[in-house]
Image (cartoon, rainbow over all chains, first blue to last red):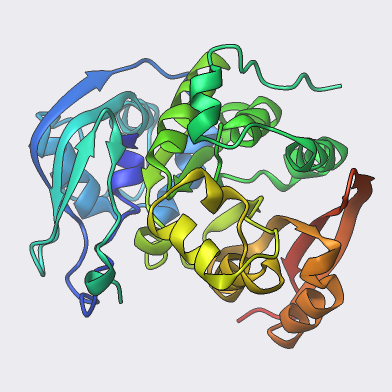
Amino acid sequence: MVRLITHNLLACHAKGCTSNNFPLQLKDVQIALREADFNPDFVRGFMPKIEWNALVNAARQLGDSSLPAEQPEMIDDDLLKALHHVLLEIHIEEGQMTCPNCNHVYPISNGIPNMLLAEHEIA
Amino acid sequence: MIPTPDLSHLTRKDYDLVYEPAEDTFILLDALEQDAEELKRLRPSLCLEVGPGSGCVSAFLASILGDSSLYLATDINPHACRCTIATARKNKSEVDTIHTSLTRPLSSRLRNSVDLLIFNPPYVPTESTESQEGQKHGQISGSWAGGFDGMEVTNTLLDESKTLLSANGRFYLVAIKQNNIPDISQKLSECGMTTETVLQRRAGREHLFVLRISRNSTDHE
């Protein structure tokens, strides 16, 4: 399924679409919240892989404004908990993700993002 | 001993559409179990399984490493995506599953970021067309039909693997003898990767291998 941690790792891969192809824009989404065990070391250790602005914007699109616009230098416990929730507990069940560059639409259905391309769209 | 994941939620109907765990699955579980303590010490935070099928292997990995990692999976077969999510939840974990071919939509964001890459590929030598049709339509034949030398799908991921793996990352790959393991090893060594055999065994007509592939320690590109 698509949690925001995964949304943060997906880019458009259509033919010729190699710049400005991330982050995919969320649209018409339905979300489900599922509690996950909090592992502060995991969240802290994962942050170098995360694009902060993309995460904050995606969270705000889903109505969660718990993250500051600028990535703080120090990550305190409260922020770790907020990150845990945003990254791991919000599940996008339905909706679509649109490439900001080529406007290709990737649908999400039953929690599964369909990132397949037709043969003529493959790079 | 780490228990095999609970797959009791999957039915005969699921296995009409999705590869049912068999000897090749179990040798991979055995290899991961054999390396379990070392894997925990490596503290992987991002595991990616390509072609999880029933989801058995990712669920097993999640039972070894727990909540210290993100588990991603990609499958070209939509039923396999559904089964993988269900199997993860049945076994009290989450595997974020993406319906796609190999690692395509993840490649640009996961450069040097994958700590554990896992692939039990379609390794059976077949006609190329049979392999391509299986992949194109996301059918169950795509889980075994491997084209020339059984390597047509695997070769694509081998080419990508160095870009994906983190410095201490590891790639576990299932293969059979006909895939020509010395060739795989040679090809990988030319791009600065080391291949070791973790396990091998004969199961019926197949001589199965689990290979562990990593970047050379001297190579810090």
